[in-house]
Image (cartoon, rainbow, N blue to C red; front, side):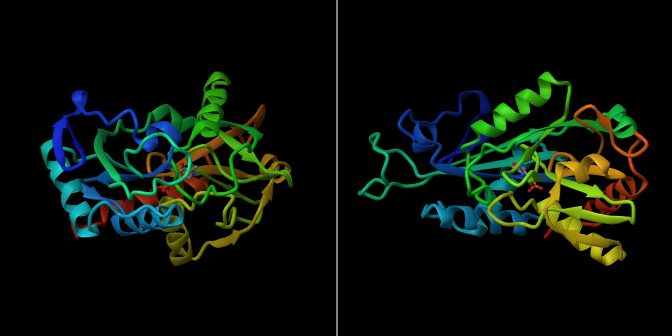
Length: 285
Ligand code: PMP
């Protein structure tokens, strides 16, 4: 397996960056995870749009043109024989003597790309659905930036793992659910309305989320993008999460309470099928 590090393809196990990389020192960088399905990069353009936006918000230059990024992704997929998995891209402000403020001498941003094979989703998770726990959202106020500063997300996911849960849903100051630690949160109400929080600085606007919003509209389901409370989530008929790695994953337990009848929701599973059919319909750009 190979990785791409600042202009070179190197064996994954030897791939390294400098100890004074600002990503390592300050988490001063951003990343993207682009799913690969049937050998095709899913929603590559929106992923690169989001990457460029995250970089702009931090005043970091794109390390190379968008066309070059696409070429490197494909070359790395080819070298690693990747047909189902992810391309991971990380860009940091680069290497500079440790000092919090941006370096006065502009640094070359550092780019790392790796790939990872995806395991098929466990049949058990899909049949039974997964559990989520809820906890206070202790993240910062710019969750819309896909920053590598992920410590609160790490702690949340660890708490979930320790509780035997798949995700930790974050609760904001108004007692509304924002999102999971690495996935967006959705519920379905008794009147078959699909609800997910509106995208602002409180959540990362998932590319899967956006693709699914389009599909929901096309299929004519009722949709509301708005805050929803922990109470509303606990009383919801169905719940699920979306992300590049989960696609659409049914949630059947929130903390210690089953969601609906405790089985994956019908609408949820219909949306999962719709999303997978969408991925299967994609052709190489
Ligand atoms: N929220 C957070 C905090 C995330 O880290 C992610 C993805 N890793 C998502 C939502 C889902 O985004 P996407 O659908 O683009 O994977």
